[in-house]
Amino acid sequence: MTDAATLDAIKKAVTENDVVVFMKGTPTFPQCGFSSVVAQVLNHIGVEYAAVNVLDDMDVREGIKEYSDWPTIPQLYVKGEFIGGCDIIKEMFEAGELQQLFKDQGLVEA
Amino acid sequence: MPMKADDITALIKEGIEDAEVEIIDLAGDGDHYKAVVTSPVFEGMNRVKQHQLVYASLKGRMGGELHALALETRTP
Image (cartoon, rainbow over all chains, first blue to last red; front, side, top):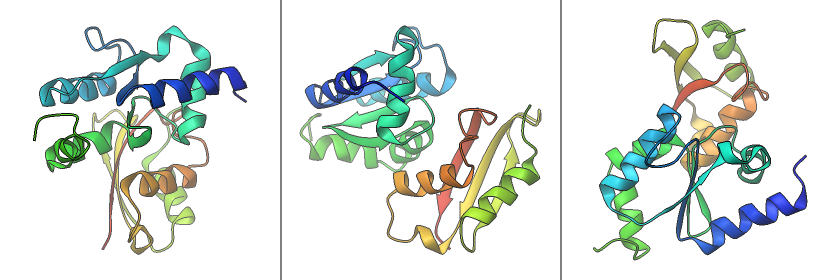
């Protein structure tokens, strides 16, 4: 069970940032191949994003799984909505859907 | 202990109606799999919901015993 303070902190992170990725490591030094892929996709698209390193906080690492009902890291949120993990992000990027989503949300230039 | 591909298939088939499951051993080490799951029940669900359904069929093993299961879901 995740305590309320951790869930609040997660909620704050996903509502106060238009784009936020929960990952292992940082965009500069990813510590997991799956997290690295998502950071690379976001860098490539050129969207601004916040990154939360779950390795810094065990409570967040477990809490985000509960918050999203999703068992793995990384996890991407756009405007408070859970978009997916590594497989979904890769699939959406390859189909052009992720780029379209950011355009539709006004987060990258159309 | 890594899971056997057959066990993954059995769990998914048990949890999802009319599921076709193809397991690919990505690294040849019996530990890094990709599952391609096709089922009519995915119709009308977004990808997140489809994947959540597969994770639910794995009953908590995802992220534990199964640390690296790539997932692709399709409708027939």
